Length: 84
Image 1 (cartoon, rainbow, N blue to C red):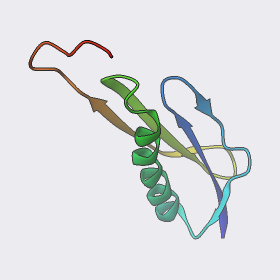
Image 2: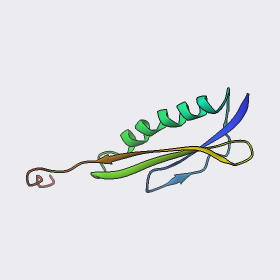
Image 3: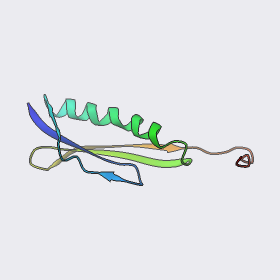
């Protein structure tokens, strides 16, 4: 088992993973990183119509071995309603 670190950024806050995860290899680390992205998006919505969420995976040496982004883009096609 190897330790991997999954850092995240939601355009408001960057979180550097200091603890890491003991995983079977880089494919499991990639899978874990990708699984985090939709959760990040759910936590931040509906704060706006445009946001990019990103993760990066570092190995034990600190080398970034994988990164991914999820971009949420919403757009009104009619005049937006007034806030309540």
